Image 1 (cartoon, rainbow, N blue to C red):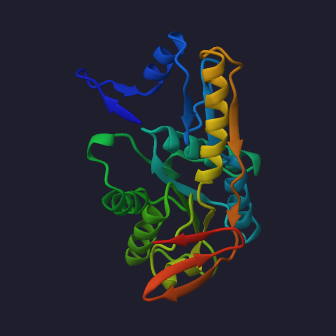
Image 2: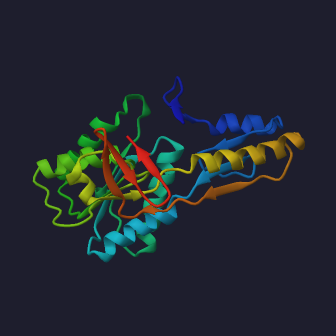
Image 3: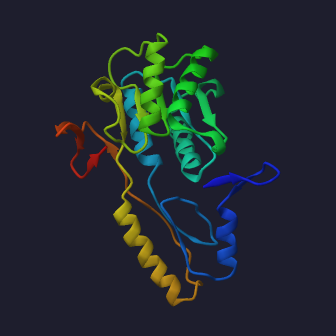
Length: 240
């Protein structure tokens, strides 16, 4: 989480975590991987599934992969870092012109930001053949805006995002690939185990930083149940 102080400086929850740790108050940072020797963190894998998606793009000939995301939250920074690391690991070129990041949490709205970012990529005249996005919703509206502006992606997967969901229409689903949803229950159970250990040791137990497995969502089946799209994979059911 992030906000701005009276002077306009960005303030994150790290300041509060540090204060809790200094007072030996037991706590676990849950669902955001904020690694530090000062506190415990339980998050989920971001780089590994991102790497799979980037590799999928590269193997199909898409090697100029743009990015649309945010950098004012832990999740945003984590996912953007995973994109950069995956691109570097694959030996793919990274250009500033191919990256559009939202840096102001005060007026951020996913739909308008996705549209604005797509228009910005077109305005820059940068060459790209795929786009990795912070979320499926941003990916959906950005893709629609890019196609509307005359962008031709050709055939196959060209849009990637974190936390796959059944957002969008059949056309978008045909070009989209994403990661599986966050393992919320597993993260909750693990966080509780660590917290109980913290309480037992009065906030002074060994610090733990863990990421739980999240994989790329591979070719999910789409079903309509009473008009509601259901995305079904081997281990997950996603309702939207």
